[in-house]
Length: 175
Image (tube, rainbow, N blue to C red; front, side):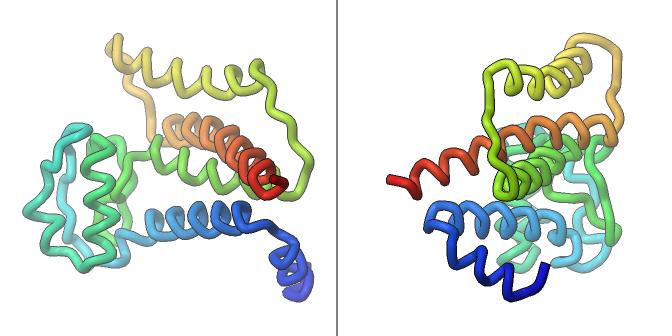
């Protein structure tokens, strides 16, 4: 696809599709590059609990962009180190499953941008079964999932949600 084709497609997108596109890609980019926005070895172990700002002393020392991303991650994700990916010797701001969800949102939205897609309730339920089973079995038993499984189950759930976001953006643009 040429750059002119991309510009032409962008010009035909409605404001809700453009907004969704920019927000989804922007957030995913910030999330994936957040370990590179700070010096190597800054984060240490961010393990905590959901809904609690439990890494304040580490996060307050970060630059404003990284601080915002890691703050949101600290409040909304357990950030258990063994359930999170690390690179640049820094733990990511969200766990593997959440990272998969965010990646899936972008993939689902982009897929639905290229193909006419219809979501049915059985498809949505089928897409949520893997994440539900993996997380619930892990919670209730001694079973410990792996980060690749967490990433994939999050990716599946996120992709269906990304398709739903595209459908909603289309309906808002067609009003």
